Length: 390
Image (cartoon, rainbow, N blue to C red):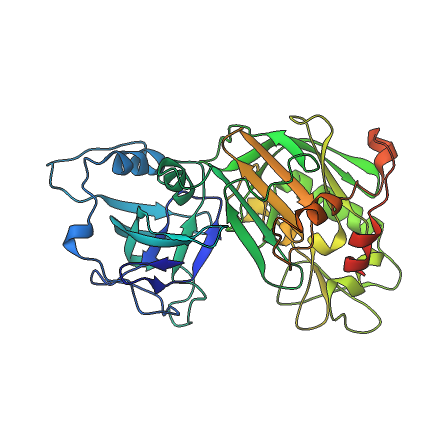
């Protein structure tokens, strides 16, 4: 995104699992990573005062406590993430250059964090991003602020391609309302996460007997995490159905990996050896999310296929089940705060739709591979979509 006056470019980590947008910042910096662009430099005039409503919202979302000792006090914060990363900083206001669908550019002044003390990743490596783009449902979120300014509806969606790249959109212009699968947003017991509620787990057309999995979507997580019981049940099912051509192998990249007769180049080389997972959400009427093998396997640099679903209880996530980026590839995922619903639709995410091609996303949806089991009509994937996946 381009921030400041004049606008300067910054790379941001798209995170639907948190509200605050922040940049690594020369305020001066106590602890910053090496980042792709020069550190953002704030001025005193850009500081958001502690008494501002957005500061109260930020503090309320982080700690539940908001106290200002004087009207001129700045808005300090400390944010901690599930992976133990953290950022300490101060809230500032600055101009964002936002390009609209009609190609015009608007420059709203939005509040974000100026982070001067970070503990994220390795400090010696160059970080891929300059900060975080917080897209949660709280009012400090950039999405909420754009909506409050009347620039876009309070709707955000992303589409991550299996082939790398993808796109992100604000507002509802690209939303294929009629064909996407929708479920009401549930109140997550864990922070301001977007949650479609609890789910039952199916594998290869049969129930794994796992019910009431509390599921949240989190684009800030590369991997998907299952709680201990669903994770162990899935691993047992995978091993029980394993093709004879695959052998379990040790790989430093991930805990559970397999090798074939020759090294795999992409997940498409190995997908036929595995079956699809399906999450069936209790909140939505027959709201199903198919997770084909390419959305839960990762091929490593050693040519092995590894399970991209990890045991969340080993990293302190307890009963929470997080759907991360690996599972959201080639799916348009839509967080519609206007209507209080979450939607998804399988889609070719390597092409940005416009008004002429949005019907292709309508056609890009597939029913699960085993619809009859869950009582749904059988419908093949459209040939258009199949040819893209081949």
